[in-house]
Image (tube, rainbow, N blue to C red):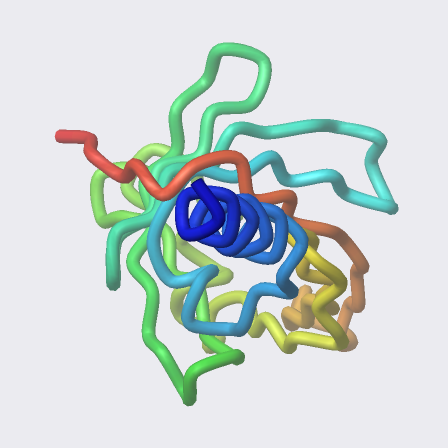
Length: 139
């Protein structure tokens, strides 16, 4: 009985620790997220799998390609299909994409800054990614 109590205690401690542990940059390379933008008050669903990303904002899907600079920072490029339909997206792609730099990670939230060139100056934005799942599948 004593062994069972010790095992149960260790198991419970492990589960509690796993739920409370801070994530690392690598935990944000794959999974499902909620993107909360500080600049636009929009919330998007993001599904990310390696170098591909799907964003759904107000029911509109946008596919992006990710170029990883390191475990934490990356550049987003709009898919060719999306860029063909939208001159702004095409312009962003031609001018280096959207650079995303990780600021900090607290528990399951990644805080980031974005940078892109609008033709006249560099535009900076801020946001947060809330990890909701490790699941990451899309077409």
